[in-house]
Length: 615
Image 1 (cartoon, rainbow, N blue to C red):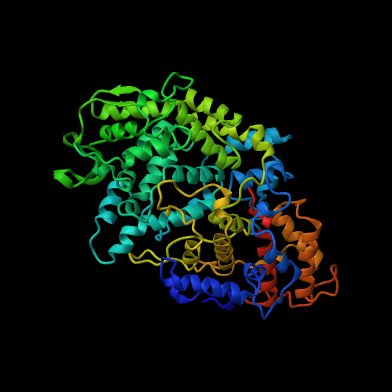
Image 2 (spheres, rainbow, N blue to C red):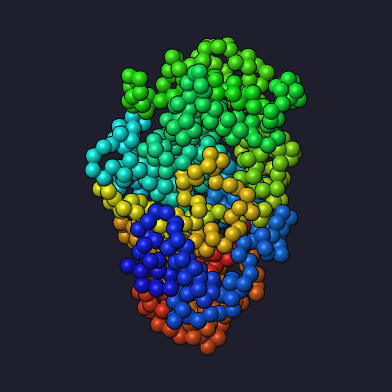
């Protein structure tokens, strides 16, 4: 039950999974009723704490860091530790006050060596060899709310996709919904942050829409059996797993691809999105013989004729879905009677009609093609470093050399990541990107050391969602929910609109004060944490304590912004001066006390500062 009326959401928007006219109207009422975006962010009732200069600043300026004078490539660099946890993780995590002796992420990084080069190398070595994940495993183990994570593809197919009993809709969608909750759990709690950043990358590269039939029931297997085993492994192996999985077969319709009328949908995306790319390496409708050659003497890219030939090659590759007397298990199935057994010519190579061997040969050729190396490495550079790179950028070319030379090596992708992350470009690029909505949410929750379990409300077949899900959905970046096969965009320009930002902030403020989870705790006691810090409860001391916790010791927040935070605490805490104690009841740390509101508001204003939106 939400008692902060300024940020309450009408029940009609929480009961519907889709934003509609009522939802849009509620968002307008939210902005108008708050009086200032700054106060809406802080989650502070207008009657309790009036507008401050800080709130006015948040309202009028710097919705995204690209609008800051110092933003962009070449901007002043924060510490390497902060950049690493902002770009290669979902934000730095402070020490957990519930675990004495716990060390915050930034301090941990600093202890990995005597120079930044040593520290980054050691951090990468550790992150690329992930072991147990206690904070995640403890939330999954023996918890009946998680029902699908250990199910095989056949179990998912039979018990969810083919389910025909009562509560059919939630049963068929349960694997999809659990995977969304698991994604957030891993982003917020996992020790292996680089793995989670890369899992997000590869799920967008090989995107399937979890809301579609079959995908929703088999997504657990797609993540566990196809994407994750090769995150630090080999692109060619991952590519074949994608091609043969029921989720992709259904999403891009290759299960319906048969001779003599082939379906070109997946063939096009295999070339355009998954391997060669749609820009530099696509030559349109020109005859194949007119395509220029690359440094390897091969056709530099593909044309429409190659798409059609690939579609013919992919005929008959589908799913054991019970059609034509096939087994009904969801497994990969080659239907020889649907296959075009005549020869095909793709990218200058002729593939004789050899059935399954044709597919293996084609995937080999695509995986070792220079165009694939440049396209994939460009996308990785954009994800891990910044938006301002092209396939011809030196760092991309160096990574592409490794990608191509090691196309059949088991550690191919590790070599590529290392080349990009240890590059001078990574060292010098900052604020070239912004956090997308789910990244904003995860980084704020990590900064808060949120103890939450993110899960469906019960083990029942018709289990509902925790309350925050509906606000999260309206941010535009719900995991596994991107309908186009391109996946969610990386470009900062796409995410700078006020809609994604406001809904991201609203999701954060809601989750800080009430996550509406099935398990306790369901809110974070910032007042109690402040009292336990052993500091003087003055505006100066409190502001510095939370700045250091969220931004790291020696934080780079400007003196002017710090002064506004101090003024906020002084005015709303009725302190006689910046170095004088708050004159409100600081012993009352109840969920809805004035002191709790004040500390929650302070945390949120710091955690959602414009500079924290950068990566």
